[in-house]
Amino acid sequence: MTAVAHRWTGQGVAPGAAVAGSWRADRPIPAGTVHIGPNEVEAAFAAVAAELEQAAERQRQQGRSAAADIVEVGALIAADPDLVDSAKQAAGAEQPLPAVRDAVESYATVLDSLPDEALSQRAADVRQVGRRVLERLAYPDGGRDAPAGDRFVLIATDIGPADLIDHLGGGLVGAVAVRGGANSHAAIVARSVGLPLVTGIDPEVLDLPDATDLLVDADAGTVVAEPSATEVARTEAASAHELERRGRLAAERGLPHVTADGQPFGLYANVASDVEVRLALESGAIGSGLVRTELGFLEADRWPGEADHRRTLAPLLAEAHGRPVTVRLLDFANDKIPPFLSPPAGLPSLLANPAALTAQIRAIVDLGRGVGLRIMVPMVTSPDQVAPVRAIVNAASVTFGVPAPPVGAMVETIAAVRDIDALCQVVDFVSIGSNDLTSEVLDLDRIDPRARTELAAHPRVLSLIGRVVAASNAAGLPPLTVCGDAGSHPTTLPLLLGAGVRSVSVAVARIDETRWRLRRLDAAECRTLFTDALRLGGAGEVAALVEERIEVAMP
Ligand code: PEP
Ligand code: MG
Image (tube, rainbow, N blue to C red; front, side, top):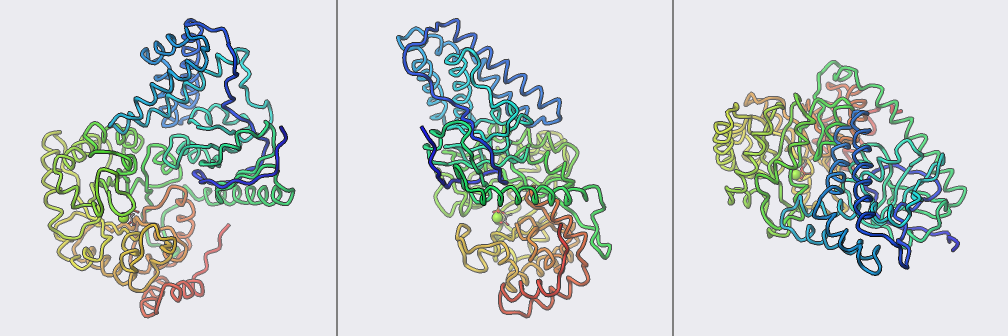
């Protein structure tokens, strides 16, 4: 088969771009009878378990404990006696390989159907372990080695975290998968190690012969087979430039967090996984100003229980040991409503389910003893919504024998701003969610492509932000944090500083750039900018003013 020049579009789930020869990791199982029996099947599972255990150990030795834990899940699955037994029984069939594959698939399907979200996520891990076992059985001479000494792009139907980790430092420069999304373990690992990964690509990509030139542009979400020399040169130049830029931004990690005119600022990270926490701390963030706890439960078919919350939170809070961490309660609102809830869901649905609220708070309070814990209520619309949360937090603190953590509110609705003085009397801190606030003020849906971060520069949004900062300071609360994306956007960051904001919590990948910018901004100049911006007519005019007045030299 010869490859035709071809271009596919998918979803870039870990940023960056790379060009190299392709290598298909999950080669098809050969048709026809292969003579294997239960002993070979058992040995293949044992070998896969050992291989994944070693990969996990290597990660641990390199200080990547979160990645090690992810890979170790695969090792445990490969040693699961029920899975191994059902595969061994299948080996008696006339066509043993397809029968073993079917046995693994039915095991995965059972997990898929379980109401426990965390267990059903394991189905993908089972399929990946099964794939490794089948490859060992089908290619006993070890024919699945990646191209020795060459740079390559890994292609597979499903990509597991171990597939990436196996080949780190061994020429792997990018990956393409037919299935999987931004929340998959592979995507988390890819982001953590800086490998571009595009998922959701047409299965015909699997038919490319190995060593076909492949361009993966995860920033654009595209994959191009046999790209032109111009496209290759453009991508390579952009990757080299990006690498150098990131290096220069990262070089300021140890420097003091103060603005050009000496105002101290707080720099925190928005996270949803332990891998992000580790990266955030490596990037010099103080801690996390927003843990999005709902992201692991967006496909759930019931309220997560205490055990579900413990499973997702434990690794994250362990990784953040000793650091300040603001954990947000489940925010099932707007574009984050799981199938078991009907819109508008949000905070009222959580408050109407005290058992669900208690389950989450108990898990947070108990597991949060090793961090500087704060608990944050999302989408608050009235000061009355805080008391029931605080009551449960206090009760849980008594149960677990720990001091009650501060309870704060996200200010991200117009109603909350309207009642901000009263709200500040019943909370221990506030944090501004500029994403939702901007959408509501400008009447845009969160998923509307016009709802861009820089619209927070609209004078109507800015004036609400200014009001919240003033109320929080007047009430003597600790300096508020902006945890929406405006906290890291070049247009809105100077305006926030001008509004009096001295702390931001930003996406992990934005930490270095945000520090770079804040260290070069003059808070007094930004104050004048903010005051002048309030008099303008729209976000575009404000952006032009920022452009005219603020110049931060970037690498
Ligand atoms: C926000 O609305 O600004 C925010 C940080 O919350 P989320 O984006 O998770 O809704
Ligand atoms: Mg929000």
